[in-house]
Image 1 (tube, rainbow, N blue to C red):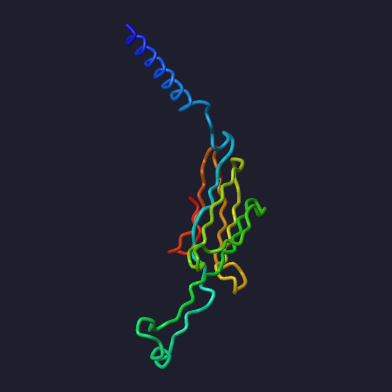
Image 2: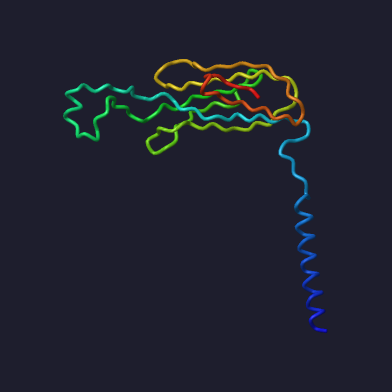
Length: 167
């Protein structure tokens, strides 16, 4: 008789645990974006230009080096930070100097920002400079997009075509 009571108590505890998990798996509800808004994800990685150009070594310089160090070019690894500006409806909402990653500052610079904006038609302007030694922004894009409620717009940079992509 004691075994039946113990099994019933154990089953009741399992049932309570399952009910607890079942309730909190769907409730309370959480929305990432309010129902009348849209989401913009401004996200890309891009390597800046090298801060110091590669130097071609002469034959005499190469002969002075040990055999495992004899490369035709000497290239410092450090890259330039990115200067990124994102504007919506004529107002700059993101402006940053993004440093390259890595111990030697030789990896691409990552950019990731989320913006929750009102649904409707908006004008976007994106600019990026990947060489701080030169003035101006060589990469530039303008776009007019009508965002629907709960729509997600991703703004990316295509490193092959060298242009911003709005998807």
